[in-house]
Length: 203
Image (cartoon, rainbow, N blue to C red; front, top):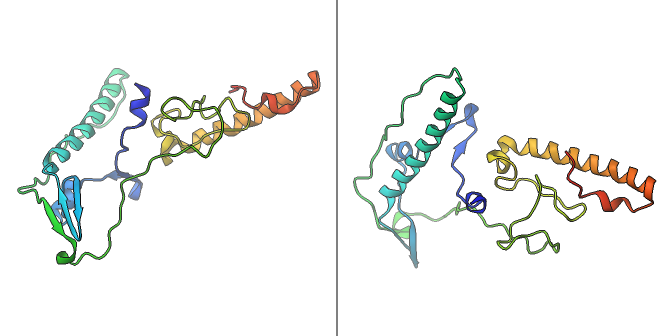
């Protein structure tokens, strides 16, 4: 289901020092305190689900699954690549705290980094499916002049990330330029407005 894939949570990665993994277990080993899913807030008190361990294990399984897919691709295409050791957890939660009092802990600021949901209701054009997701061809829609960039899986896994959004931008720029040139030709031959050709899937 392409729609379900688009809605999956993005993996946490960093481009620092050329790119490297982010290991929450290593952060915890070095002093960061990890908690389960936030379930309730009462005054200055926070309550958490007893799911920290299972969440960490699920994250590890997803990461290893990605590596398995990469290894399978390497093997299938005979690519010469170094073999890396499999991940070994560097920290385990011996206990899973279920509550935290912000005032007692001296915590005065909270930064919510939970992501966001897209809201396209301000776009008054018939280009959305039943889930409210844009219907497009590599970013170009059926509405002349309306294009999208940076959508999850717009064309590839990297479309919603810095890694590949530039390639999608180049494609859209070429598409828009080609559409305009075709529109000019059509207008010259038929006298039709150039706007009629701006949404043609060229590329």
